[in-house]
Length: 194
Ligand SMILES: Cc1cc2nc3c(=O)[nH]c(=O)nc-3n(C[C@H](O)[C@H](O)[C@H](O)COP(=O)(O)O)c2cc1C
Image (cartoon, rainbow, N blue to C red):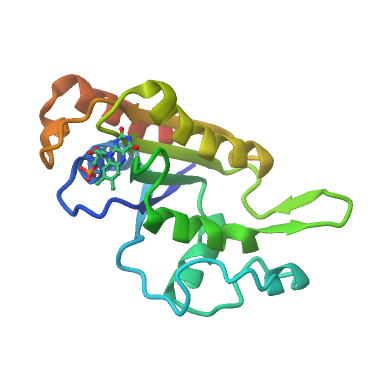
């Protein structure tokens, strides 16, 4: 069955290393027959940049943010996919502000019952992370990985990641490293179910 992959792009640099590695992974996934959609977190327009905390989504049966803007509409499409891939550089031991803005709006994709149980519109989807960072894996990219793997478990989603520590600062340089490029392609094929 064709796997539907949605990639949320969170790097502010259009020709940066994160987007270059994500492009390699997504191209490999397409070659395996996956259907790929991209959401560019930097291009989405919004009435509010993140979650307003109004909790109106929790009072509704619909898995959709009640703030009707491009950002909210993009988030509402996430459950239509088999794989939700976040592609981000690590900024200050976390994802970028643009990714955080999308993730906070994902509050509407879970319904939280008073007994603590969670009904997740993403249950069974794979949550995936592709991240680059100028620094090390330890106490750095591994922290970012946990920031996505813990919510994944909470939402009932398998989790996979592809991390690139020690990324050179020059835009696009990582994609010219054959070993790194091969890892990105392997990851893309895995996302496609190969
Ligand atoms: C605001 C800012 C914060 C950063 N924080 C970290 C960090 O906490 N850890 C790290 O390893 N690299 C950090 N970096 C370096 C980037 O993660 C790294 O250069 C990344 O590969 C850039 O991706 P890009 O080419 O897609 O822009 C930071 C860079 C910027 C601009």
